[in-house]
Image (cartoon, rainbow, N blue to C red; front, top):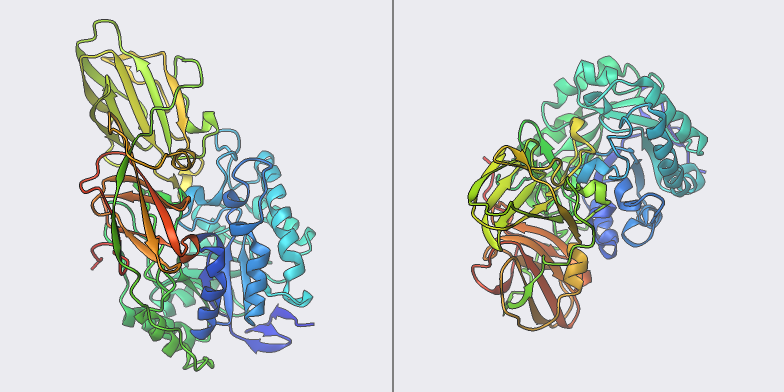
Length: 578
């Protein structure tokens, strides 16, 4: 039996001093067929541990509908880590941030009915069911039971959010009651307040930072007087948002900061080792005075890029690790260009005109009122008889982007990011507002906020009633799009194309000739695209392609400048940050 514990100065593995050299790899952001490849490449960089969050809303998007299979097979992922001869760190939250939608919390854990991330009994009741299921998977896979798990984290950067010690105590009690015996940790940014608020005396404190290692470790040591120092989120890159730039960090600077960290004797978890992709509608958003939805790629400028290829940062960090620990002689193969091809897109008709299924009401229903988990809700209302034009105004922001049309003609948009609250309407009879949830805020106190139209809009200062609220499931719509041509008509248009591959292969779909929407290959939901950038390609995992015939479906919300689906040799993630 292998033991793992915390000593006076070091982590102890079978009683001997042990340094954790870990890399973050989120199973829910990587196709399961590619898990083993990414884990193996972590070992080849010199790492001995894999860290992952557990995304509650991936496992239980609807209350009681628990899924731990396929993409959600945490047990298989941990077993693959063990098979590679590596350890694992599990961070189940229940809040994870991770730039993941709603910080990992399911939307049914409604912030209007319970106080999130607190000792509120209603919230803890929901959390208990989740953690019990997670720990059923983790408990038999602990290191002393022959598995890979050496550490489990309690909550996540809680000191940046709250200071409810009773909440943390209950999470610890529940974790231990579920048979988790490995050491428990917390992580916070290295400030005195966050480190004090975000942990308990019996939990081992770690830090999250990406620079000024010596200074941050000194702050951490003031709060963790004994035991090993650890940066359990060493930020070697950063994430991107729509309308911004592609963030990168200097390779030499990242290597220098890692060197300083390891020279001080600290353990590390590199965040991220491999970022992966926010497939489907899983991207989060930030809101620090302005709502900024995050892009589909989670490349993160990590040592392994979005397609799992080693970068210059991989080799630079590997050279640093080699100064402190043995690294394998083998290195991963260099990236090879992806297959390039181009096919014509065929219009397949409008796709947002599904018949309303609910009666009209005085107020529009939010996504949450409807229990809707997809990207769009269409709101329709009759304008007053003889309406000759006027101002439509919303008292509460649209969440998050709305296309406004009158009698089938588009008038304009209302965007949360722009702080829009009003739009001028022309004369007409029928008002339609198509609202997109662009991603749930994943950080700070906007967790759990409702999406869509939150209040009835005002028309020239008077509330407009008689709304029908029609949820549109974009994945279901894409699955039902017929092959072939159709008249474009009014409204957003769907497109299809067929293409042929000699063999299954990772691809990069170029979206630069399109405006905004969603793309699918062989029914697999690649994610969102948007001319707003910076991202210009969508990653297509080779596991969803096949030799022979393949099919792409594009649900365009605005307009296609060129009706072409082009696959290019490499990712294009946008203009770089300075």
